[in-house]
Image 1 (cartoon, helix red, strand yellow):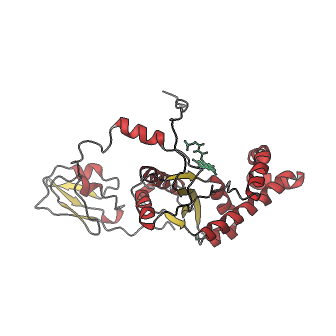
Image 2: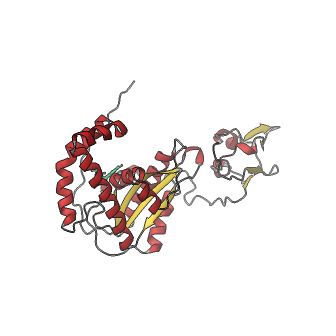
Image 3: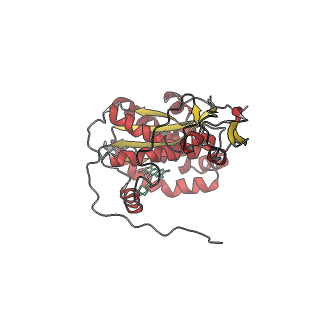
Length: 295
Ligand SMILES: Cc1cc2nc3c(=O)[nH]c(=O)nc-3n(C[C@H](O)[C@H](O)[C@H](O)COP(=O)(O)O)c2cc1C
């Protein structure tokens, strides 16, 4: 059975309601309806707790227990950033693979994680969970476990029968991709053996986002939450690098998943290394135009 987040439904203060119907129009769950020129709650149990009704109400008629609405600092008429500022922000964010050894203060990490909670989630489930590793010993252990997972995978890929059995589980395309990646993996392995961290790039923090695997929105929820975090990290002058290698290892190696204390019914959907960059990018990088089919 699908689990529903505990949500307090809204209430309408009739005397304050001016009958503008905005709360009814924005509600995605048919919670509110108009009756005699006033908004009223008709399906409280369907509320997903998105807060849109209270945020849109011009007369503060909506009460939402546990949801402290704050006044929009700019009134809400104009977005917080100009298109130019926003474009520059998303263009100057880079995957950072060179860090200073400085640890990241917990206050800063909390600020970064806070950016994640403002990301959208399917049905407003707010179901993103994080593991934040800050101890060098623990990051080292995770690196070792992840690398030994890949050592096993690549040794299978190298063998004819190993590759065949792997393709039954992972698919032919994946095995072909892994086979093509073998030379690169060997170079990475040699670098790792020399003490270079080609997995986390010596990042002082590793963050993992996980959520219930039954929820088809979990992958998106975790990814955009961590992307929000990465943007906040960037404006705080930190850097991140998403880590698909780790995501894959966590989801295919029960030992790693258990070690991270990720519940059995969750999957890891996104991960990143994080720290202070020790290199500055002088230029923006061009990207190809969007692949759009206009119809
Ligand atoms: C889902 C995902 C997984 C990634 N995994 C890795 C990874 O395991 N290792 C790595 O060095 N970079 C990883 N990256 C970073 C990409 O290589 C990077 O985003 C891309 O090269 C573009 O560079 P930019 O992020 O600076 O624009 C990943 C990015 C994404 C979105």
